[in-house]
Image (cartoon, rainbow, N blue to C red):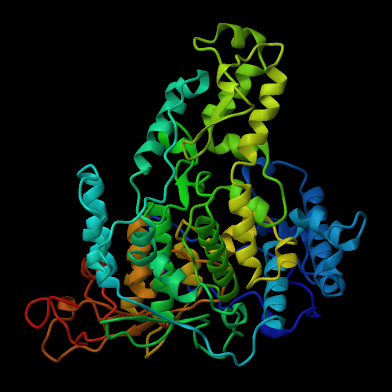
Length: 596
């Protein structure tokens, strides 16, 4: 993406700049790293020579652009930069209410959103959010009993492993609920008895849907999950209370005060981020059955297997209320910069920014659907199919549906193949329209809906959910040393050497340990502070564990003797999930405290 940073006149207030401008912390040349920092993106400046700029850009050009005429590339880049600068100046004057009017300036800007850089979209978003924030409104409070919620999760998981024979009341009792029986909220889907549903891929999806029918009851969902408790406590909160202005200094930007009952946690930022991390874990993991893995999850050879979409079968009034609340939480993440770590497909993001999902979006997450389309468009393949196709389909969550009345008895032939393909595409692309409308309505309570219409689906995804891939170079560029340390201090050099060698899972664990969230985002300012940890005289610093302050993204490091010693203790520390403040500062391995 192009970063139009060359303008000498800021089109928006400096208080809404896109993020920290801290310079990269250099990695010492003497260290060997498994992962090299990314090259810093160059920006075009009127005072810089284009040839020199191209030399800087060559290291970051995609392979498809290598070898093309460099002057043509530079002219296009300069044009994009100039376009972004002018659009950024003009956007505050654009009447966003005219987005749907043919030929309107707002509509033209929305149609050209793919030409707007990440920096342009981010700066405009920040300005709009600042001007629509509620001033001096007390934030709502939410109290979570995490130990009880973990106990409920364990019992629910055990019930699923044992075949669902255990009573639901045992789970309810673990969170202090009444033990009366409750009604299962999921919809049992019928077995696919027709052509496409009887195939192995569709059959597997139907079987997965049948297995999901033993999910949590409404009572378990509302009282036994972080999402459900939040819905009960915040569902009726006035939306303006969730739209606070960004505070000054290093104070965390939060929309609510999160209290973990029974845990001595100080500060607001750490519990707030941990709350959203817990929500993402529940939603991605299926404990809150609003999301479902895309169809490709059942095929080892497919791409995008880790993505999710909304559940087509969750259409009751309660379900739509839960989707609306999910949208509100996504809007809160968008507004305050906290990460809600969801893995959602483009099929979900496009409608939220006012675009229709495309056939390519669906094929990217459902290989079987793509093969069915190939079959119906080729008469020879259609005639030679081992099982005759019928006017039925299986939705992403395994729900079997007829595409027209009595479709299960109607065979697909070359004569009606075009009609089948049209009905199939409509059914699949529109299978969660009601759920998406509820999510969009919830987001609009805290984020101006017209603002979203000017963003790309990718920008919304990254701003709400962050990057699944932890970029150590990005983390290093946004770090600062304090307490007498510098980038050249031995323990700091050891620290970055170790981080560049960690796996992605270990890096995510580190972020949770130090910041209470597992992903980074460039759309919200952050700084990792590296501070020395004092040790007792006569005690080997290699025995100490590092310590973190999740509210302010602080990591405190003892004076380790080697990268190996630092790595050992860091890996031991990042397995900790306790946020309790009652932890000794001078904790060592061999005597004082094994629990922290």
